[in-house]
Length: 69
Image (cartoon, rainbow, N blue to C red; front, top):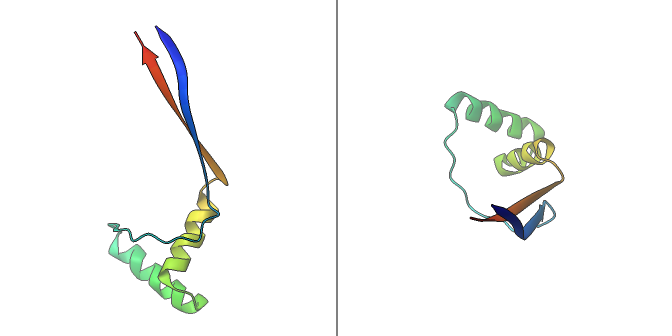
């Protein structure tokens, strides 16, 4: 069996484009997040983006490998 690297994708969080997303979130967590966004005087979108940016690494590398048999 031979394994070869056929591609590599590097993503970073430096884009300003927005995309609509649907999530299923515990209602209590959502209520808490909305309240915190109001206190911070930011949108819920901004709060979630800030939380994700803090949680995620600066860069993600995804390697696609092709397995030949």
